[in-house]
Image (tube, rainbow, N blue to C red; front, side, top):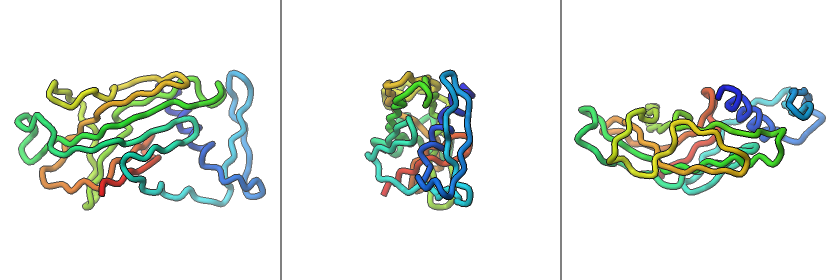
Length: 182
């Protein structure tokens, strides 16, 4: 799984190149079929990802994802901790790598998704699954082959009074994309 996350991170690095070869350096990363050239800007800092409206699909390297829908206060309310509620996001993810050198498999899981509120609160995906949660459920861990997609609901325990503003997809602490809810 760690190798797959590294592969996804490499895919993101490939997608972040600005195409200006004069201001970038090229490094080689070995792969089963030979070195993969990855351009890294030498003096440029990656900008924060731009907010994306819910329903909009984004592509980063060979990975594609979308937040398709968002629901607040999903059942079962009676099992939420005092002062909390359950919110849910319907998420779609795909491995669209076009060559074996991009990635044969990409790992996706609900831990890569967070909710954020306007006060700076961050809410991780629930590890608890109740049969009353919306279905289909997004998989806990799945390795997608090239061309495969997965779609499902991710449920989050949030503060009862939280004003959730965005759904964020991140890998190894780096935000890849942010979908705005309003």
